Image 1 (spheres, helix red, strand yellow):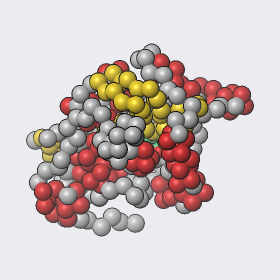
Image 2: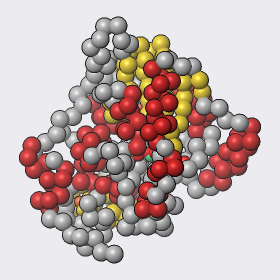
Image 3: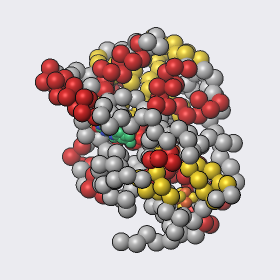
Length: 301
Ligand SMILES: Cc1cc2nc3c(=O)[nH]c(=O)nc-3n(C[C@H](O)[C@H](O)[C@H](O)COP(=O)(O)O)c2cc1C
Ligand code: SF4
Ligand code: SF4
């Protein structure tokens, strides 16, 4: 199957850059924008590559705050009645950018929660995250998971994955999580002894193929015959890996492995350098726009 070649103009229009020339960025908020004085002030931080975690975060806050934007130029101290983090499971751990956030940001809240999206097997992620966060003084009252589309392009064909959406019942899971958090439920996702044993086996296995450290130039390659220079990859990369130089578009540097670039390239011109399940199948959450991914991850003014 060939990919229909889009013009640069069409691509810029998709990005929303043609009309406005620039984007509003998150500029730094210390507390949530809760207008009802009786309501609790809640701040929700999120990281997303393909929109699943943002979709969950939007159910928990009208204005969730992007972790890459805080790391770029936000305040580093936040206080609220409730603070939550929503992010994807990457091999049983938080993405490197979320780990960096934990190392740098000070949070103070009476009720702290995390919701971790995952695609197949959450293994020990809740337990490992709870332990990891403790070293930065974060004590979570509530940690839960939401099963979504698995965007690990290395192993999963996104077209096949799409067929599983109905049985995953994402909306039902999110509704339960929202109900729990709104009632300040105290609960950490329970890992049964059997699941624990299986999780340890899986973690041992995947530790032989660590996802970090990862560099963009080693992980990805640009198909220059397909690329139309639309800038989408530059705009959606939370790690500033893409830029234009004498050689045209290049990608280099420390990579979050979020696949926002590959999943959002309108030409499907960004491929994994190694094996991948289906280089022509890409995914963004159906209810999240490209502009929302740009606003989440964009790393320049
Ligand atoms: C690098 C990487 C590693 C992943 N590892 C796991 C994993 O170990 N277990 C799992 O169930 N899902 C895994 N996933 C799937 C994601 O956790 C899942 O698709 C998530 O909802 C993506 O969130 P996002 O759309 O907000 O980026 C992985 C995805 C990526 C990109
Ligand atoms: S590689 Fe980047 S610049 Fe080229 S078409 Fe894809 S998103 Fe646009
Ligand atoms: S290069 Fe691609 S995969 Fe790596 S951080 Fe940037 S957008 Fe994510």
